[in-house]
Length: 198
Image (tube, rainbow, N blue to C red):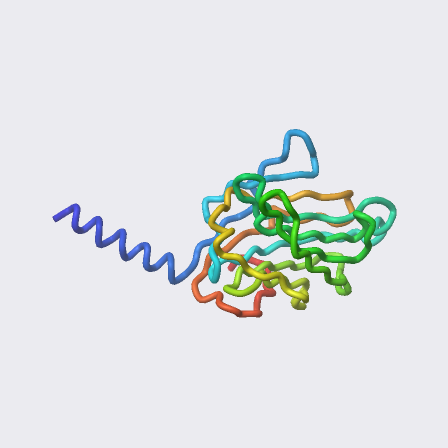
């Protein structure tokens, strides 16, 4: 009887968690020992198509905008040097300015890059990346970034960790206020603009 009781409680707990969703802070991301500007996270939660969103706070120092290299990168990494999803905010880097780049690296090759103009940066920014069944949907301060990047759910199964890197000091992701969330029925919802855990 006790074992059955524990099993029933476990099932009920799992159902409640699935209905409410789960959140994991990115504050504990480890700094790369070879670079003060790079971080990596082996998260407990796994990114799931139709469930996962990443919420970031990003600080932008306009006075340093074009003085030197400026930007930030977010990666969903997989095994065998796979970049499942790569998101660049190129304020002034890699020969371009005010540009968002989304792409993927598989089997040693970068492919299918999507380029978007950055037009709505402020001093404090909300960035959301939603993993919907058809696309990675990115919003910057509530505005949908287009064109959107196609989802490949089979590649997401290779997930191992997240990584972040800051190029210069003018645009930085505030990981202490950033998190990932797995929540049912994400679907193709575009209302992914809030960036503060409840």
